[in-house]
Amino acid sequence: MTRGSAFLLLILLSACTSSRLSGANLDRVVQPAFVSRIEDGAGPKSLVFREDGSYSEKLKKLEPKEADRRLQAKLAAAVTRFEISERLRVNTIIQLPRERPWTNIIDPARVATALESFLVEEVPANAPDYDLLVPLGADAIVEFVVQDYGMRSEKGRAGAYIKGYGRMFWLDGRTEVWRRAFDADQVQLGDEHLDPFRVGKNPELFQRAMSSLVDAVSAQFTQDLTPKDRRGGPPLPEGVAPALPDSTHRTGRENQLPPAPQGPELAPGELPDPDP
Image (cartoon, rainbow, N blue to C red):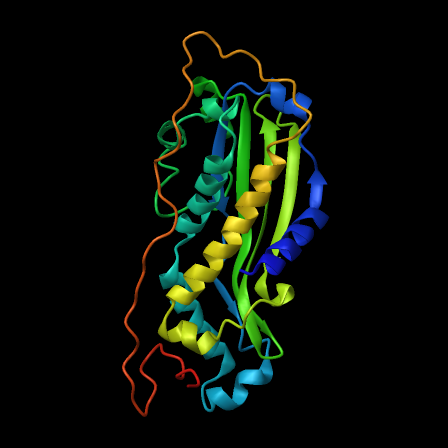
């Protein structure tokens, strides 16, 4: 993502802000827990060929609906729901300042156990029962939710997109103290065209594009969760040690896939070759 695109993305994100986290509210947090999830049916989606007729000549006899189905399968193989949700969570945490309450985040492995293997490959679509985190000492929940993601196209220019929101709320009473909706879209940003036919042959291109968007959202979340009007957090409860940096999962992955065999006929599940 270019520097200009990142700046535009921040404007787009800022325009969607619902409520700002105050320093006074953050000062009250003692032991937060982070949860990142993806809603059911959020993606990955391919809204390329059915919504943009620019590719009809290239598709020839292949129906747009079938072309989108094939591309969607490639997107799902490129990056999993788990990887996207974890990248958003981990990248936000590692950018937060080493100060309370961020030095006292509940270990994600303990959160996973309490929420019955929440950090598994299949990311739950529905919100978990956060009351299960009360015995761990959590007093606030930072939740990231992805509601829609994939690829889309307008006038022959395609790109990745991701939509959702982040929020913080008190576990007791569920009162929100911070919320930000996000809508990061490479087509709207005017980023370089993400050729869907090239993605069909090398799905890692989508993984890279999605990682770039997620990282930009994480950077904005970090900024939101670091208000300037703080006086300092409350003392840690007796017996509670500062948490170590989150290393449960590393962000991103190498997913080099070989190109599909060339031939006069399309292989099952494949898209036409990209232009030279």
